[in-house]
Image (tube, rainbow, N blue to C red; front, top):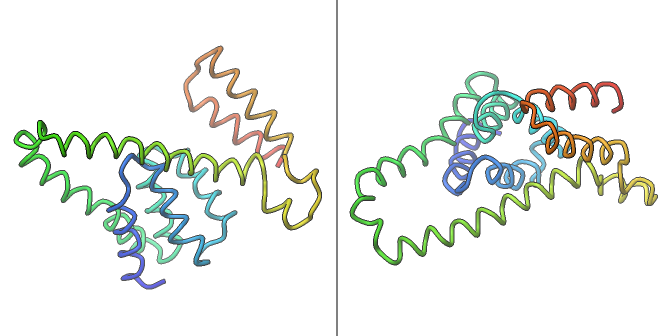
Length: 186
């Protein structure tokens, strides 16, 4: 992947990501995993690292993927491609929003964006679940029903959900527990 392809790929991701980094993950997967630039396993490993590092996951992923392709210059190119559309849109909105905000079509547009964003986040969550908890690719490769659910991950996932609901500790505690679980059991 050339620098230009990298820039325009992330410019596309940045342009059509409305709703945050989880939406960006769906588009990144479509642009990078589907054509075969990166494997699904590598992509989801990068998602885990990007989710664990400080900052927005979409920017972290763009930086990480850019670095993976072309080192530090690639990280800068991918990050610039991701950020540029938002920067331009925010400048335009800041200039005109006070005039536009009461227009019916603007309100309808934002209402529609909420629904679309919810759907894209659901797709991203499903994709992560089909790799981590319900490894469909392993099941398809082996044909064994026992490969369809990774019980260790499912039990750990349920335990973290229950612990979070009950104790409400800092998310870093759960991330650290997940790292230890992954090192020890996976």
